[in-house]
Image (cartoon, rainbow, N blue to C red):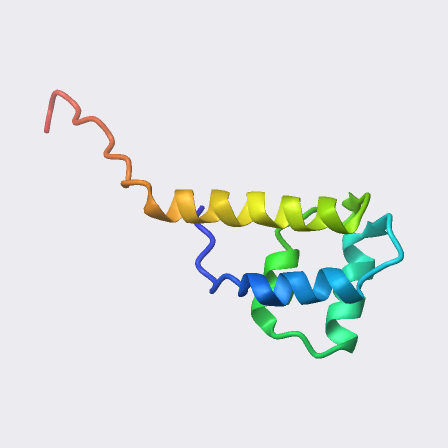
Length: 90
């Protein structure tokens, strides 16, 4: 299933990385900080792509993994839809 929400601006992810911590930090802790600082719903929905028990070892780890997920979402959106092969009756 393709993630259809708007992706957050990388500036917002970078800002969240600056204020989040201490690291290691769980996704739940980072989401709490994002809510407390009033980050938009795009950031909160994006963070939900990570498992609830996800732990980020450092700011760099958090940013890198957010970049990777964003890239995967974009690739999935840009991929052509797969056509199912026609059956002999079609």
